Image (cartoon, rainbow, N blue to C red; front, side, top):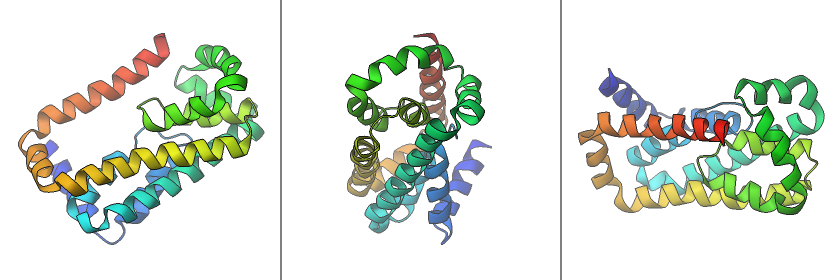
Length: 192
């Protein structure tokens, strides 16, 4: 089953509408969706290495625009949408503590979350709720999200065929590691 899912993703990555799916996933991940756009960016670059920079640029732009939507959720709709989203992920207690750090460290918090596995949607909503300067938020988002997606694209562009062979040879183990890291990140955030 895992091999079929991998084959389907690789097949989708080579199709003309793959870019639309990448943009959609990158946008919604930055405001409310739990899966990162890397799940499609990686196979897309592996399927068409010559498009690596284009894919990274679209992924960055969509992610930043999604981050702006998350900021808007926090700024305009925190009571009706923001609190339920944070509550769904179990982040309300952490969020209250987190708000205090925003005035002093907002740009660094946004930049750090943009390149790490920390759920970026929490940062985008928190930025709106705490009224972090929108220009600061935007610049930090562009720089950090761009660094993340362009680094992934650069590594896959440079080392694509060996990485693809490695992924195909160790797909089961890599999938387990990916989900352990993803779930572990949520657990760590919830209980820190």
